[in-house]
Amino acid sequence: MDSEKDKPFVLFNCSTNVIGGGIKNSVVFIRHALDSEKFLWHFAISPQVAETLEAYHLTLDHRFRIIDPSPARSRNSRIELIKLIDKTPFIGVYTMAGPAYIETNLTHVQGISHAFITHPRLEAFFLRPGIYHTFRRLLETIIKAHYSLKADFFIFQTESARSGFCKRYHISFNRTRVIPNAFDRELFEMPKECKNVADSSRKKIIIFCPAAAYFHKGLHFIPDIASELVKIANGLVFEFILSLDETSVLWNVVKKRNKRLNTERFVHTIGSYNYRDSASLYQNSTLVFVPSLLETYSATYLEAMVARRPLIVAERPFAREICRDAALYVEPKNSRETAMKILGLINNKELQKRFVMNGLQVLASSIDQDQRFILIENELSKLFNTTASS
Image 1 (cartoon, one colour):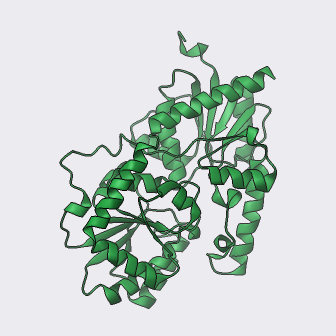
Image 2 (cartoon, one colour):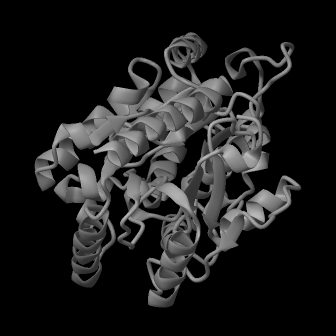
Image 3 (cartoon, helix red, strand yellow):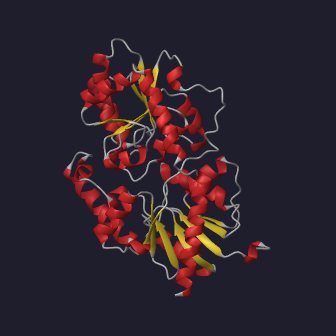
């Protein structure tokens, strides 16, 4: 098209993305959308997304609207978002990670990456102790599912998530698409001389555990695993590095377990970190451990593979679907067995190399963020045009 005014207007809504991977994926998408040749994108963003964009020195112009507080918590914010949609000639709305908590007459395509909505095991509802928290999680899941169903079309990151959603809520597969999560090739450009961790000698084993402060991420099992590792490691110097905010409830739980088990020297948090620092954090680690018991498609798996770090994950179907033979599978709730498997991996350089090489093969069949953006735009173009012509 010859000029910006000739492009169809589309709203990218990430106003409810306030933590973890939701912020990161929103920022990556926006950086691509600003150079789109297909649509003229406008953006409804959270303050947290705005802060990360500014870290990239991106100017927030008239196309950006910061919605605060989150529409998930504020009726006024939902009204503000609807007004923005009504006063701008958008052809459709794309919410990357729903629910959006709104209903609009425009075609609304919504990403669903909330695993509690799509394919939870019963265990996930009981990971945070207390009947109050279990009941609250169940209620939140019902509310999120209710609002999610107000969209017209749905995009999932895995087949298991789509199947679970369609089966639970009797949604036609014709209203759904699968576009997998992706890795950021640009962020992880590494010098060719950078050695694989399996080839290097380290005095301290750094086990990086990047995750937001959700109990289903399984991070509260780490002190117990560290305690067991101390017993069998024969003086091995190691450290689990978490990325939990020190004010979070989950870090407080981890801290109490550390104190009870005397593992404070072995389990630390660096706090939440800026996405731009991801590459250096991975490259400074020896292993990457993702003990999550419920995920849709964690980009952490792919990021570890790109950084050429051996990966340890929870033995769950969703992890197998993504990681295949590129990870060591453990049961995080069984601290003794997990510690033994981790020690076995630390002492087996050949196995580390095999996981790294297998990870590169997984990446070869995966998409990067450039490709993912193109796939999403192409799918949106079809869906918006199909709805407009029907």
